[in-house]
Structure formats: structure tokens, C-alpha cells
Image 1: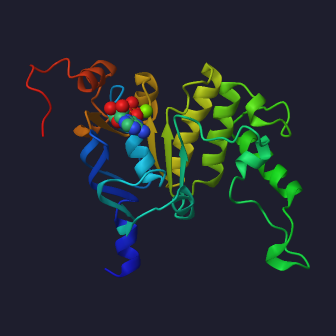
Image 2 (image 1 turned 120 degrees about the vertical axis):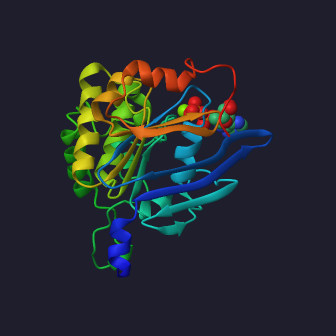
Length: 263
Ligand SMILES: Nc1ncnc2c1ncn2[C@@H]1O[C@H](COP(=O)(O)OP(=O)(O)O)[C@@H](O)[C@H]1O
Ligand SMILES: [Mg+2]
């Protein structure tokens, strides 16, 4: 097997023994999981289980305390979110990281403004027109209509902001897309669009992680469920054969005696 075949056969993302402490709080307690190309993994768990912390570690927003992250079988250590983006990893965070004082187009192109080559070469000016066209396309694909691309995002509704964040991730996510409660502020129609986008990304061989409390959403689009409880992975199994009730039992531990969490 040459290096290229090896990378193609490896999972798009692998997390090994990831630990994250916030001071005395252990949010992740040795989490290991893999996500392959074309998979939509439902990352599930009760509030405080560690889902957002895991997403933040993978996306370079916070450094893990220990453990490894591998992208295409290569060890990575992202010092900043931009490093993860460069590796083709896009994230919609639960606490939407949009910049309220910038307009929709600027938010969609945060940190990757198109620069028109000109007399100044790489120092040329931002190509606003091209950015707006691409922003329109990205949101059109989502079936999302924003009154004005020149409105500051701070003036948009929660749902519209969430749509901008999802649009940004879908437009740029080449390899791995992490969605932390992407539909929480969306209506029924737009939630359905987000789910359809998850499936479309997977069909394009992107590896998708979807955090959701909506069991119907999870059952509809996820191919595998990874359940966290108190920072431990307590289940990792194909979605086939799982029911909403079964998922809820896994998440809450309702079906277990008071033995606590498996180490
Ligand atoms: N910035 C932080 N500082 C201290 N504790 C935190 C911080 N962020 C999260 N935690 C704690 O880490 C644990 C996991 O939180 P989180 O990853 O947000 O869970 P989830 O997304 O599954 O609800 C919780 O106990 C939470 O209170
Ligand atoms: Mg969370």
C-alpha cells in the first residue's frame, strides 16, 4: 500500500484518548472515535456530556489537555481555527461564531477573503463582487433567503444567523464538517434543508459530525451514533436497528442500574 492508498483507506478523522480539563472539571475523559468519508455520525449526549468540547478540540478552537487527533491518518495539532479550516474542516459552533458587526458576505468569507490579482499581485484588493456572488450561491443552495447581504449579522434573527453559519460551513467544508446543534434556532423548513445538506455533503465524501437533541433528525440522516456521557464514549454503533427510544435510553442511561459510567 503506498502512502496515498493508505490515506484513502484511513478514516477522515480519528480521535484517540482525548482528554480536556477545564481547571478541575474534566469535560472529556479519554474519548476515542473515528469518522469515515461519507458518514454522518450523530454525536449525542445529555447537556454537559462533552459534545461541544469535543467539537471545539477538533476544530482548533481549544487545545485538548492530552490525546491525539488524526486527519487522514496524519497527526494534527491545530493552534487556531484557521489551521483546521486549512485542513478542510469547517464547523458550526453551538454558540454561533459569527461576527455581529460584519455583514453577511463578510461573515461567509471570514478569514478567506477573495483577493483579485492585480497590479498589486497578492496584495490586491478584496474582490467584493465575487464574494457576494459566491455568498449568494452558498445560501441559495441552502434554500436560505436573507433580506440583504449588506445587513450586519447582528441585525439578523437567530435563525438567519444560524443559516449564515451553516452556509459558511457547507460552502467551505471540503473534508470534515462539524455541526453543533445547527438547527436549534431554525424553523421546520430550514431544519429539513440542513439535514438534506448533511446528506449531500456525505454523498460528496465529506465526513460529517452532527450534534443534535432531535432524535428524529438523528434517525433520518445519521449512519452511526456516538453517545457521550460525562466525557466518556458509552456507545458507538450503526444507526440501523436503533430507535428514538433506544437512543434516549443510551443518552440518559435510563435503562441501566446505578452502576455509573463504564470507564
Ligand atoms: N469554558 C469552560 N469552562 C469550564 N467548564 C466548561 C467550559 N466549557 C464547558 N465546560 C464544562 O465541560 C462539560 C462539558 O460541556 P460541553 O462540552 O459544553 O457539553 P455539551 O455540549 O455536551 O452540553 C460541562 O461540565 C461544562 O460545564
Ligand atoms: Mg453543547
